[in-house]
Amino acid sequence: TCAFMWNKTEETRLKETLAAFKDVPVLLGVPGSSEQLAERMTAKFPDDLIDLVHIDGDHSERGLRVDCAIWLPKLRSGGVACFHDYGRADGGVSSPDVKIVVDEVTAGWERIWVGGTNGLLIVRKPGEAV
Image (cartoon, rainbow, N blue to C red; front, side, top):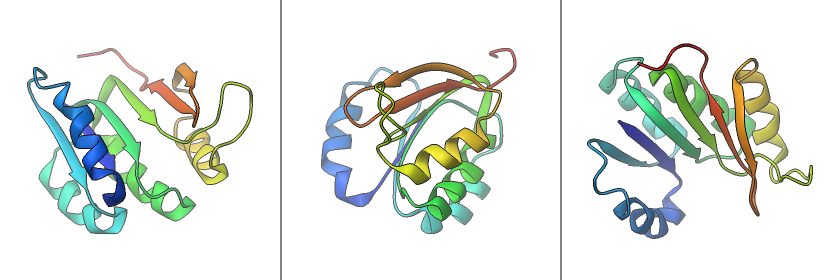
């Protein structure tokens, strides 16, 4: 099960990207603001359900904290989280609030990869993959 969160302005581009994953058993694209999704998603999905989550929504500190509070508990042990606009491989920062919040909420998680033009961080949640 994979969940992708994005802001409304990127909906067309992300839908095209998600089409490439048509063979994934359950793939969920979730458009909307952090606040719009908080109550709906928290109630709809149990914790420890998702194998991969990609967060590229509200880049403010407050918005990202809401996104992480919603989605990271839903991620299974050993699952993978991707954060867009984290920072570049050359050490530059794409979005300072993203780096600050992600470093805090994923402290102790395995860093798998960081790079790309806008800095995608990929981390693995501690624990054995189910």
